[in-house]
Length: 465
Ligand code: FAD
Ligand code: NAI
Image (cartoon, rainbow, N blue to C red; front, side, top):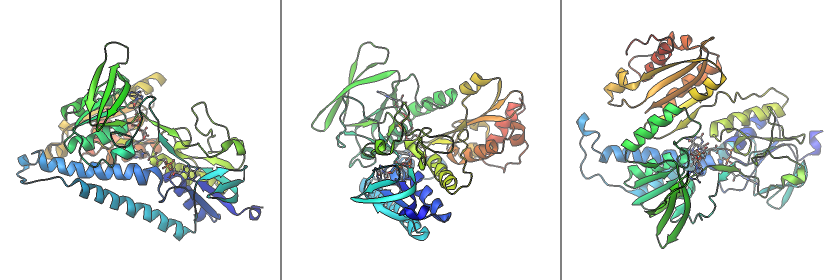
């Protein structure tokens, strides 16, 4: 009997996974509470992740456009452009406040109770939150992730920062050294480079952006270098020392060899994120972890303990907000006795640099490891709208099964890649072939025509190249 509990559902964590799960559970008629220890709702994504980073990416792009002379060829000349970094941070904070406040409004509208404080399990149905013990029939762990520390490198949020510190630097660094050539390093590196910093990215692997298609990784590296990024791939950081407001970053080839020291006034540590389980007392409920320290779940998001579920960054899979959100909907539906499903093979990834870099499904390397494939590629250099906008960097690449023609993966490097990838995800969700995309009418002149042409290229018959 659910009534023996204070709530039908208790969600722990109000990030994109948790707040969405709580709202959906309430929509389905379940008495729902959500425990969150932060001052505001929305988790990493709204407070110190997706939203503030995109606000700074947008603002810094405007600044670079205004100062870089790129608009002169369109006949748009600027004089006396200056940077007001405090105002840039203020506008970012406003966007964050509006959006986190929006979640509070949605909680009230859907009658989700916000339990303020840190949650810790007492047993499988009892959780202590901020000094009070509450009971729930079902509990969803959605505690998210936090920065992976680099041994020997102390984050002081002044000279050596993590992503949260890098979103709030009070002045533009002269030289920012980024440790980790992944998504955070490239997005936040772009922000500070556009605002005037020299940016050096130190990446352990031979290429930036692990997990992305090989050709996309190479093309992206080429474009970032053209923008002025220094990319030190195949290089490891062996230590960072700070004296006053300067840092010395010791690096050496990953394979071993002679080292060197990089002098910097800011260092960003961005080598990945780890699941948040500290202090949750999972052992009191008997919840098992995977080898990598995530909360272990099955296909339906159930942990090993009946009535306890997990979603989002704390569980296995891509650490992305939209993946967490979709899992939030699905877990609530499963708890309510419906069939909630997330297709983890079709989760788009977007890097919000300029150009943007996006992908969904398999890389060419991963697809080839599974069987024979056909690949179609179309460069934006041959796309009329991209040419009109003088915005011709990048390409669309479609990977299809050689026998069935079913689309297995789509990769895009383009100013509009993040928006364009939705079409590819939907096509793949509907089981499309490359021919289906090729015979879909796309409006002219748009960047999206490159998707159609890449699909035609899978059959070897693009029109415009
Ligand atoms: P989180 O958003 O981490 O939320 C978990 C919440 O649980 C937190 O608010 C935390 O305070 C709370 N919590 C933890 N433990 C407890 C406890 N014991 N008791 C109570 N509350 C607790 N993803 C994208 O898809 N697109 C992007 O553009 C993007 N940009 C990013 C930029 C940056 C700089 C960073 C760091 C991340 C970015 N991400 C992005 C990743 C995205 O933020 C995460 O994938 C997403 O927030 C995961 O959602 P979640 O609900 O699983 O966890
Ligand atoms: P990441 O996993 O994307 O990249 C980390 C990089 O650091 C990798 O290239 C890795 O090889 C490298 N690395 C690891 N150890 C190293 C070392 N000792 N020295 C040098 N390099 C090292 O992780 P990142 O950038 O920290 O982001 C974390 C997660 O946040 C991402 O995986 C992503 O899921 C999410 N995110 C998503 C965004 C988006 O969707 N646009 C934006 C920002 C973050």
